[in-house]
Amino acid sequence: MPLLAKHHGVLLEKVENGEIITGRGLNQESNLARPGDTRWGSHLKTLLRILVMWEAILEVLDIVKRDSIKPSCNGGALGLIGKMESFDFVFIMHLMIDLLSITNSLSQALQRKDQDIVEAMHLIMDVKEQLQDMRENGWDPIFKRAKLFCDKNEIKVPNMDKEVNARGTSARRKQKIANPVDGSS
Image (tube, rainbow, N blue to C red):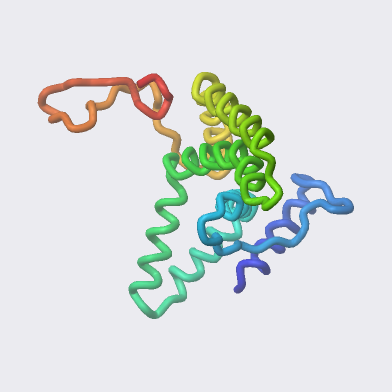
């Protein structure tokens, strides 16, 4: 079953359950786009579509895993499902959506042929300030959104208070640190 049909089915189910509302311009049909060359906007668009079409993508991957004759196809689908259904993937997806959303307007402006250098410098300064603010204050909101998404989609969230071995050290040496995903290290 094609991805669009699965996504359509998921949308209908959500409308019937009252999870989403309908109206003009809402829940328009979408499809996964292949990321463009090096344009950040195309990567942002792809990540946003993955977020919106999450359930349908996983259902299609599950169908490929079950119905594929070639081991490489069902193994590849199984691997993708495993990666997507991890907290790391979800957290990084939300982080990248935030980062690319901040830089998207600058990216588009710098691609214009009639760009004014003064305007470009103002945009650069604005993006720099937003990124600094995200660095200082953005971890908790991203973590909360990723955790909420994981809870909704039954994805295991690691205990952030648990100490883990420092990267690159032996487990026997017991050099423990706080879990690094929470932004404390």
